[in-house]
Amino acid sequence: MVKDIPTTLCTQKLSEEIRQTKSASTAKGYLAAINKLEEFFGRDVISINDFTNTFIEDFSKFLIAEGLSAATTSLYIRNLRALLKKSLSANDKEVLRQVFKSVSSKNGKSSAAIGISDLTRLASADLSAYPPLRRIRSLFLFSFYACGLPVGHIRLLPKSLPASGCIPLPQNHRVTIVPQLSEVVARFETENSSNFVEYAASISEADYARGLEAIGVLLKLPVRLTPRSAAESWVAIALESGIALEHIAAIINDTTPTTKHISASACHTPGVIPEKIANRLNDTSERWYAMRCFDSTPAEMQAKLAAEELAVDTFIPVQANTATTLAKDRLMSSLLFFRTSATNASVLKSRIAPGAYVFSFSSGDKKPACIPNDQMLTFMFLVNIGADTILYYYPSENGSSQQFEPKDIVEITDGSFCGNVGIVERLSKDRLRVCVRIEALNGALISAEIPAKFLKKGI
Image 1 (cartoon, rainbow, N blue to C red):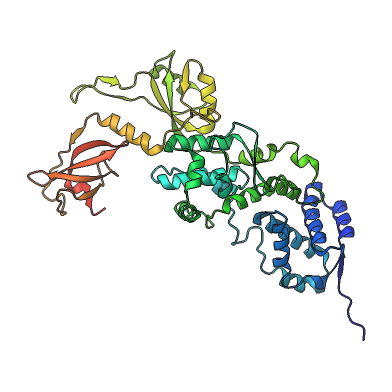
Image 2 (cartoon, rainbow, N blue to C red; image 1 turned 30 degrees about the vertical axis):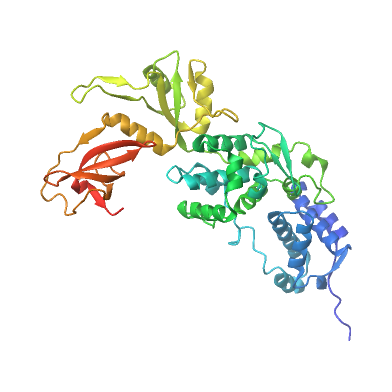
């Protein structure tokens, strides 16, 4: 009785077939996986019986020992599975399925990667009401723009980053400074008045992970956001953008060739690929910016902007002189605030110079500095009310069934102060109006009498 001869693969023959049948970019990904497979077994003829139940675990350890990241290792294994699926006979498909049963697909639920639309939404979300999450978001975006650089390596960067170039780091990592990295750092340091790298060194891995999970829940992302999401998202978007697997490997572990066939062109222009991926995040969200007018008054500049192709919302800070006159004074005689996208703000900054100046970050690439939405709305609100005490007269005996006492914390549910939280200072004699102290605009205090029916206790 003759035993069945096990199916064998000749890696050299398989490589030649791939070169003949696949496009150059597709072939590189498959060839990278084949070369690593040949190195792992130490020969170019491999039997189907060599693919044991521990193959995935052993092969993963081999790749990681050579310096590949977990994300890149996963990509090699998925490419190898796709290659074997097309190369083996139907009788061997069950063996293949058992060997690779623990490997998820590219879009599998176990992946921590998020797509370009969700990543753009994360980058532009208004987190001004959650300062700790906003700081963690900055750290995550920096990790993404730095090609998935782990937070542990961000801590090793110099406290003052150069405007361009590359920074070598341990474990075969390096950071290519793209404009978006400078922008993240400049915005972080402007918003928090603290050094970005020092912050990265101060936050624990557990707090970073919890913060990312909270952001994911807040934004209702389709997958759980984790520290590895930055790297996996970068790799997924790079593949989607047509970047060959060997180039991705060269960037993630740039100082050591991770495959025998990596072409020299992968490192000729190291900033091209990182910048290409960073530019995929087209931020179209609109924010407020401030402009100082020199040659024109704010009202004249407002009229000019209305006639521009880049239509923007504008706001000139003025308030009434008294409660009984319509005459108004400009609080800041040369300032005009406008709302538009980051891209339009940069174009507008160049277009209006030198007659006007759009305020920018003090470091980095001098991009326009946006104003957090909650701060701008509070500022506009304070300008519009024009007084430190406002009385509301909506007496109604059936206005509220709630009873308030001094020092109660309340939420204002209607009127001009709707949405604010304050502390009860005192009650009117008829108990229909409540004097509430509201804190806003970085510590400014407003005292206002609010109808009791506009209040909700127990916040």
